[in-house]
Image (cartoon, rainbow, N blue to C red):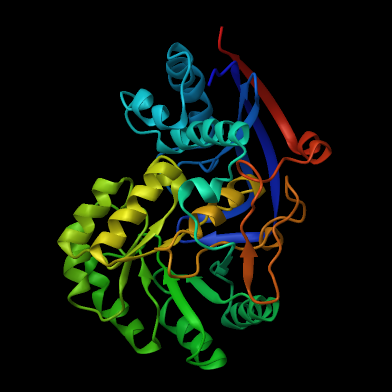
Length: 370
């Protein structure tokens, strides 16, 4: 397949409500979209880097710059290429996995559209819909948290994830468990906010029957996560620590986790995400699909990934209206059974709505191949 150019498009996506985690508060998404242009049609990728380097070292401005200066020229120089070539061609550039993932997804989308094959079919999906969970940010008060959780359960979400940080952990979790009962699928996400010195506090969460505690310690602390696993009963899930299939193998072999949150942008793309899925299956570990407040373009790819057989826990595959009043594609809708449908059309199976895309766009840059 011949790439004639890449368009880098920035769009501003206001959130329906502020989203607070242990590393900050988001009120809007500054999204970098990548469009791969080919003689046979276009493909889209979404870069999940945030506007500031808080969740990871990557950020949207830097991702756009590294694509323009270093990544896109390597793909142009290759001439004809397919999606399996992208990671190999970009490997000499260190890091920048979110930028690489956006390019690979755009190339893969264009390639699959030309073949008439869906993202889910290509990745190996075995379901046409996936169970939806929702992530609930840190609130100003426990009553506000209870109201938020009640609202999401009324909408039909099957699993609740609570963001936690020191000082906002045991009591909010206790309140949610007592209010909604033992049958609620409940988990927590620390976003690396704790240290091993907090093991006693984290062990206090054992009494609430949580599915998992996500990334309690720093991303480079695999050995300390393994030590913590021996001190608490709640299964540890790793997120920020896992940037590749190799990282996943190391974590599982060390006993640092029993569950992995697979975020395709964080690991360099959906093909590496599938390798992590396969590896986890071979080790008897569970995986689930995390979210980065994606638009409908990124969400389409995520729900396709979440339909693979090893994704046995509900992911952060929320409906569009969880975050956005207006999505850039036709919105993803939560079904009455708490599931989201996997698009079945060619490629991602969704298209940006032209008028909405134009209204949300803040800038565009065209990178020609020639």
